[in-house]
Image (cartoon, rainbow, N blue to C red; front, side, top):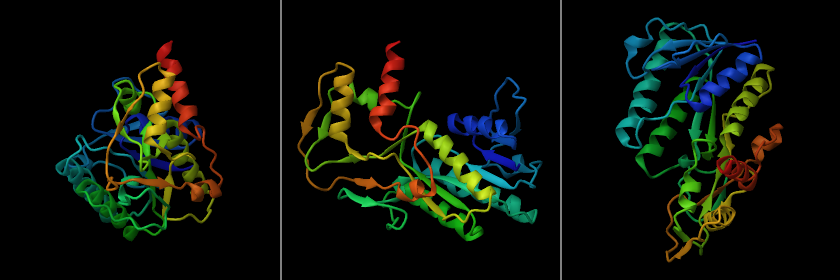
Length: 284
């Protein structure tokens, strides 16, 4: 069993911590505001990674780190605080202690800047144009340089309870691009948790792993198709065709073949499985 630090215990990090603790691992969750009610399975350490002094008493003998931190806002300042300042503070902390644990870093498919609806995988050029995605990409590269065993998991758009953006859009009879198709790539948050634990277990048994894994479900579908299906299921008016050119930003299809080849089986392989459950839960 491993001694594990999970940096960032939001919805995904906290559920991952519970899962790993149940499997017998010693888990510490680093969080600015830990839960008020104690969790006997998880140790919590209160810290803000952007403030190095708050990390002074953090132990450094962890075998595995997960970095699952979300910026407070979707702007350059917030992303720099997390993916530059915060990450540097953590790397410095472990470097000064002469410790170099393995990291699993939660990244994003936004590091791909492709815009013509083409397929992308781990070998595709990751050269985004917007600054927030550039900062995520730079953080990936920094971690790979620090330790060749580190892994970056590039999640597609995460959905699930509390992450219901497409449901809200579908209820509004939105303008949606139909031709050429604009593809949407998703992963249910339950699969996020199980992908991370799956990669950890493979790493712990000594299986050689790649530095990058793209985690998206089996069905990168046109947004028009997804919204139309959601609207029909919720008895809402269908979307309206939006006239547009061929210059859509970050329009791509994400391939999960490498993760599949490693043996991962998705709990929600497509949007119909995941959203059917969400819609049913909301109806009850």
